[in-house]
Image (cartoon, rainbow, N blue to C red; front, top):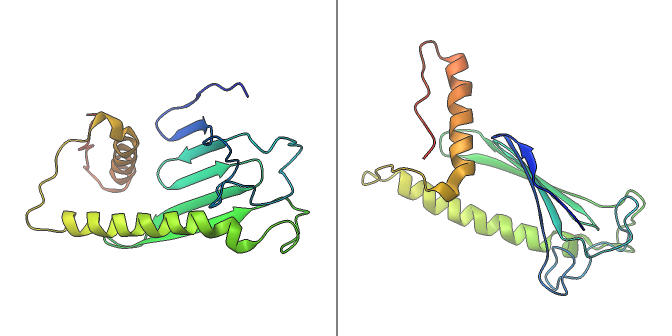
Length: 166
């Protein structure tokens, strides 16, 4: 399927990625998570269209389901994560899809991410931590940090943008 990058500036990004040969969905074995494809789709092997909205919103569009997740900071050391799975409106649980099969891979991903974030938080909370510059590959973090600084500057009198591109 032909595609072009979407230019959404620094707050939006959309990409399409192919699956590994034989896989068509985010399931443990790569098989479809739902028998009913979304919309008018007829081909299950379309890959994953991913849409990111800085600062905290990710969407994965597949032929058989959509995953939406967002992170919301609730304190300096805690973040709430919400993941939502969407299937065809006519899909019937237990007939067209199984909730465990639908959610297994992304639940495991969320658990792995939580462990990574916990270790990162422990490291940045250490007295030995010294922040360094972002790597060019961390452009989405740079975009987020700049977005956050701009938002704070709008609320804090006299605040200035402290983060710049690497």
